[in-house]
Amino acid sequence: MKRVTGIGGIFFKADDPAALAAWYRDHLGLDVTGWNGAIFNWGGDGSPAGMTIWSPFAADTTYMAPSTASFMINFRVADLDALLAALRDEGCNVLDRTETSEQGKFGWVLDPEGNKVELWEPPAGQ
Image 1 (cartoon, rainbow, N blue to C red):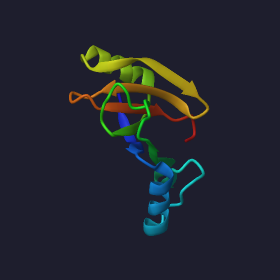
Image 2: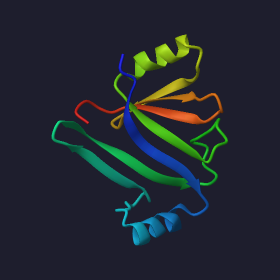
Image 3: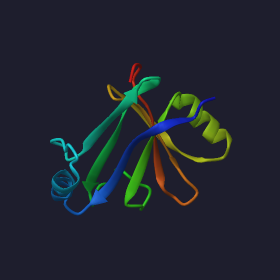
Image 4: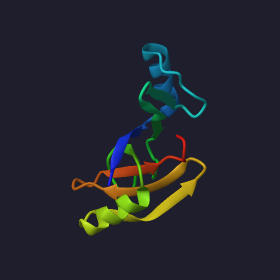
C-alpha cells in the first residue's frame, strides 16, 4: 500500500498571522491569500498536479490539539481509510475522527513525541 505521497501543507502558530504573512509576502515573495496562507502549485512532465499549503494559524488555535507543538505537517496520502486502518493495526495513536469536505478527506495521528500529523487524501484529480 502506498502511504504518504507528498507534503500537503505546513501549518504553524503565530502571534499575529496577518503581520507574519505580510512579512513573508514582502520579504520572501510569497503570494499570500486573503486567509494569510500561500498555495504552492506543483507538478509537471511526468508528475501529478498538486499543491502544498503554507499557513500561519492564530497562536491560540486548537486545531493542532491535542498536540502542544506550535506546528503541524499535513501529508498527502493515496488512501486515507486504508492508511488509518494500517496505523491502528501497527499500534499508532490514531485520533478517533475524520473529516470529509470538498477539499478531500482528513485524518490525524500523533507521532511518538506527541506531534499531531494531518493525513489528507485530496479529491480525485488533485
